[in-house]
Length: 119
Image (cartoon, rainbow, N blue to C red; front, side, top):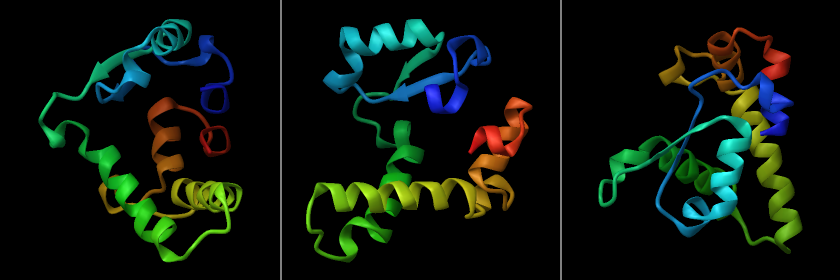
């Protein structure tokens, strides 16, 4: 959150944290995070995979383009590769569903900020 918004006071009204019902999202830690940052916490419907389809699709793409491509020496090496992929995915790769904008460009338009801030 801090990387995305800097401080809770800069989070626009109505920003959602959409999650499944896993224990990491239903516990007190997550509730405290949601409250601190002023988020609206919504849960994907149980038993309906389409409720969280966008997140599941990003995870599939990440696995296809990074995780499954080779055997990794260790968690640190994989973590570094995933962070590099995440940066490319969000800042350099246009997405058809976003009108051929990068996620950073789309986010900046929606939040009214510069692309640098959104990246």
